[in-house]
Length: 261
Ligand code: 13P
Image (cartoon, rainbow, N blue to C red; front, side):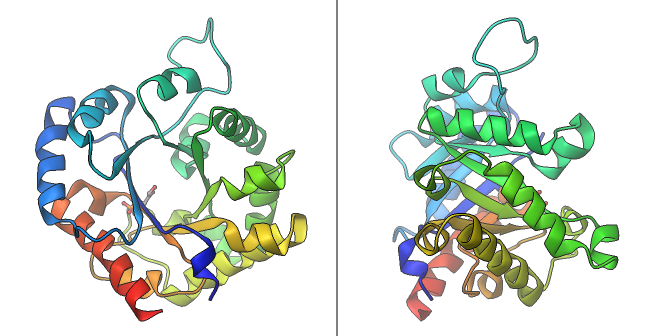
């Protein structure tokens, strides 16, 4: 349903894993195992210090370079931060923004997520904006209002054209790294709802053109069912993106998905 209007994306989030010296071997193994047919875009979001090695290793391949965060500031006295211009200079195509681990451990607010997303878009780079509810919020029936709040806050002051260049990742916090995946129906319910929020806040055209991912214990075994859902356009993969064979299988699942459409 309308999937033809948007790009499928499988993005790995390596989190704080992998050494610069391990990037080359990983990419060689992944390239050998991933399908040659291009049924989706592929990205790996690596720690900052691993990115140059990853860039070198992926050169000339279809694997795009991603970061896991960016500063909301342009340049100057912000010790420890990395600017969007610095990321652009090394060929970054995607930046994960507002991951629940950054919201939880680094106090990132919805306002900051919005500011970082706008900076990223201004640089011509794709923000992968993460939203998701806690287990407590889900159990109290607050999932959909919480998601709506996060999505609207993240997209504040964006033009329709800017929203269409964003990727939204629905990552229920209780499913991250726990092995407890949302069922395909639970994931689809929220991804469909996110598309509805974008439709209400912007337009039907923008809603049907915006790529929405699911993330949270997605793996080689459950990817096909999740990716088969109408509003799930791809995945943001943590643990399984560290294993070339598993990551390649998830990439391949998008080919089977589009073949079934
Ligand atoms: P896992 O796939 O390890 O659950 O992590 C998901 C995630 O947080 C991706 O950003």
